[in-house]
Length: 350
Image 1 (tube, rainbow, N blue to C red):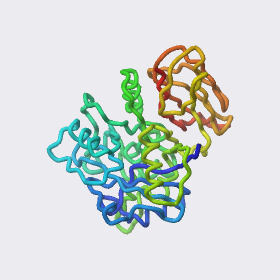
Image 2 (tube, one colour):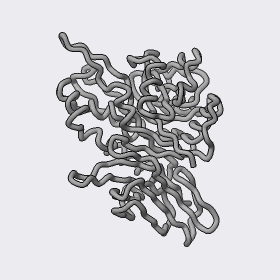
Image 3 (cartoon, rainbow, N blue to C red):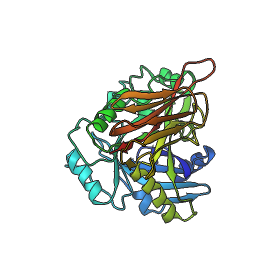
Image 4 (cartoon, rainbow, N blue to C red):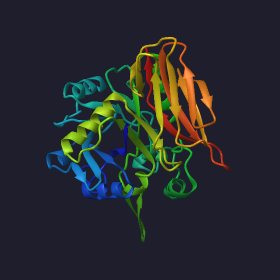
């Protein structure tokens, strides 16, 4: 399998980000990303102006984030724009699906902060919907600003001290994801940076809050594909979209420890699959997890509960019944407490 690391949920000057596509691509190259997915609000102008494609060693894809006032929805692999005005959340999901797109609910439990946009927030409240591919469980920018008391504390906690809100996925989003999986829904999970590179002016001071390159070294998506990038735009974009739709990826905080090499598979005498796939249950079905370092705590989760764990870099678990199984990996530093690190997509045992 080939592994490709990238940043999902990024904004440029085509909406409310401060960087051009070229500047974002440059930041992604410096962060050693294989791809970056730009999701400007309700526009595909960058796509129509052919700003997508290869920028040296980084592939840029142009996608979109739909809805301005509520129920933000990340839509990937669209070739035409959609106006979300007047559409219910379910109608919006259906429209994206009709156009062959891939859709993820963005920052579903966002709270906001009084000091930013007068406390405006954009949660998802319509949970009766069906047909979406997944939800965003980890959003660096959104979670960092949630509850921020003032700009100084926001800046200090984000860049120096560390912020408890962003050091792990949103607990409410994780809980909702497990509920959906327990309800036998095939729901995937992504992590995003929600990068805007916000330019701030305070008296004589000028600085950028959450620069692109900084964020591109935090919450990233690692795609898995049997296919190798070719250097051809259309072919390689299809590799990215195919892996995203299939759930062949995991989310990781790259600031914790390099996550490349993580794997989560299932096999029996008939087949072997990876995360995002389904496998028939029988008495020989085994889940296998491999972490890039022995300083790991690996947990296999089913219905929101830990069914197996290991304080090493490997874990095997014999499946005893049907269900959706996902993996969490925590990094164990020598002197500090464990840190949330890797979150897989489920393997669906049928």
